[in-house]
Image 1 (cartoon, rainbow, N blue to C red):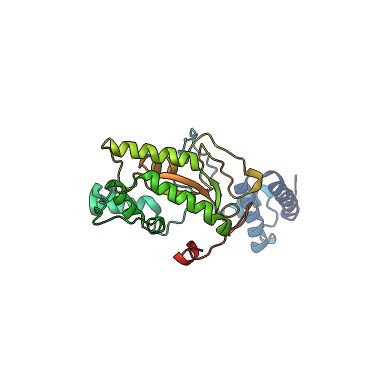
Image 2 (cartoon, rainbow, N blue to C red):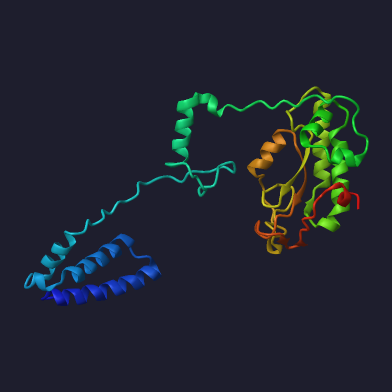
Length: 284
């Protein structure tokens, strides 16, 4: 037992040094460590002489009284929540004051539930003759391809084959394809054509081809995240975006490069060449 405040301070300093070491190694209770540090700091500021013959415990009580000791709160027990692939990441930038919840409340207060109603997207019908050149078709925007497919002026299989051929032709120059999914793409396109022939349309993306970054899980193709160590990695489920696009009728053509772990333009297959994809390059 320390007999003087000076001895108490020496003892407290030694304990703090030990706690600091333990905190670095084993993760000692941070609140306790901060509290003890503040007590020692208050003691050095006030001076121990003013407390004279008080006992070390009285000294501790006197200095601690100047500092609000943090209450130790045990977090309530909570069962883990299973999150689907469609959930947004927990860490995201939200500049709105008080966060996403406050923003949602304000939107509801102003607009009611209609603030979250989806706006309908209408594809304007195709007027006139359809392009016949594969290159002209390849450079059409998605909503015009959608109009052509819906009007039965071109099939999903036809435009899918055009894009698959172009990916094979241009990839030696661009080095952007990680996995070309020819068989599954053609099967998906044929299925969309059969549905359309039966009078069923899934919406604006019905039969429209697309490519996917090699960051998203797909059942029928590897997902490498750009690293050779995981080039054969394959999941038994599809990422949420894949599920939604498939349900909307879109046709997945290929897994595309995004750099090592989505950084820069280098991946395990080399460097993706980000040339400006105008018609002069496409025709080269």
